[in-house]
Amino acid sequence: MDIYLPIAEVAVNAPLIVALGALVGFISGMFGIGGGFLMTPLLVFFGIPAPVAVSSMALHVAGSSMSSVMAYGRRRAVDLRMGGVLAAGGLVGAVVGVELFRVLRLLGQADLVVALSYLVFLSVIGGLMLTESLGAIVRRRRGEPALAHRDRRPIWLYGLPLKLRFPRSRLYISVIPPLVLGAFVGVLSAIMGVGGGFILVPAMIYVLRMPAGMVVGTSLLQIIVTTALTGVLQAGRNQTVDVVLATLLLIGGVVGAQLGARASSRFRAEELRAVLALIVLLVGLRMGLGLFLTPSEPFVLMSGMVG
Amino acid sequence: MTLLAALALATAPVTSTAPVISAALTDTNVRVSSDFSGARIILYGAVFDPSTWPSDVVVLVRGPEQPVRITRRHKVAGLWLNSPPVVFRGAPGFYRAASNRPLADIANFGTLRRLGAGMDHLPISAPAEQRTETRYGVRDVVVSRLGADYYVWRRAVVRLKQNAGLYDEDERGVRFVDRGLFRAEISLPAGAPTGVYRADILLFKDGRPVAVRSRTLTVEKVGLERALYVWAHVRPWSYGLASMVFALAAGWAASAAFRRD
Image (cartoon, rainbow over all chains, first blue to last red):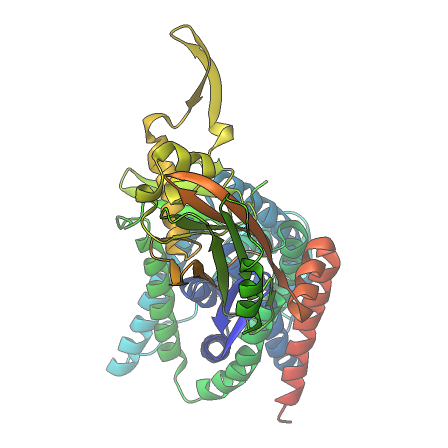
């Protein structure tokens, strides 16, 4: 059952795209991430033009994050003030990111920057997560106690001006680190077609030292605001948002996410982290591989943006 | 077979000695809706030729012109990077050349080049890379920044379009089904651009085109596809806002539907 996508201008197999949405949704619900880093490369692999995949993902990530954040909100696991500060940075980052992406496409270097971003960020994050989670698994097997949580926050977090109290997270820190973090993730969201949870969550735990229970819900809030703006900007500036594609992905995605969230309770946290780390690492390396392999066709047609 | 009947009627009153070619498409309007996965159009035609001298038929179908942006990957310090993109103009978004025997046997290089018959003869050029200068005392010599590589780039445009199923050349595409009556098949892939297509049906004798007939074909989006496409391009901001509101509402609805408590 093929369906023609009006903006991407290609015909895709509708059940396949819905299944893809469900698979990524399952992973995203299971690990509490957006899943954009997995979905965007898969869409490109199935023949969707990269700019359309990146832009339409913003809709999908926003929609599926919306469905998850409600659950966290009901459990009072969202720090609205911290989310607001992160989102403020994210808005700036999204505007910068969309313009940057436009310039990169004009220069013909969008592919390179996207591949490099995937290679660098996913490999680093995946590698760190894998080391950390494997260490935890080994220690548990040997019966050793878990590493004591270092509760000391970096000094520079306190030395910066513009301090603000975040009662939900029990923090009293400068707004500059969360603003910068939000802006950085906003830029990545526009360029890589991801929500940015895979960077936001570790940074909130290890840099901002937020309580673990608050992190996922709060990061989702930032992701919704940032991707919502990214999606509108991509549609307005680049006309690359395909609402039919996003709808197909959402149908599968929301169902998959709910199933994934239920399945996650059956596994240990460090085992889940190890599997996620492997997936992140593999996607990063696969995306980066294209930079090193000799292409079979040295010429590449670039879709759109001719004028 | 009303078409055949019409052809038979049309054959009768031809008395002039000049050869005439006539053709019709089975479908002049291709509608791209959500289930569009390509289309097949049959072209029927007839040659009215009082002489018995053998003649050739060439069918050229061109889609609306689409500038092509192309980049070449080259190795820099172990990494494969894109070169600055080059824009080629004059490239049709869709191209089919069909003939009853190889084009090179029908007419010479110059004639084919002038008519744009065959993938190697499309009028594709990269004007932004060109400048005119005086060389060896000759004024207005067109020089391309791409230099000797220019033809490699040009061939790459055609090759990539061919791989995407948008360009094709079929030296057996025109088949005579009866004396003077021929048919050709035009298959449009799902990725065929929308717009007005032109089919030129040429009659060749002794390597020269002696008669020509043109037909137009419209490929257009219809229904929801058209509405969304127009909305996204004419009012991109309201389209973006509406689709985002829709996505967020869908996420919210899904969470409400799956709520267990």
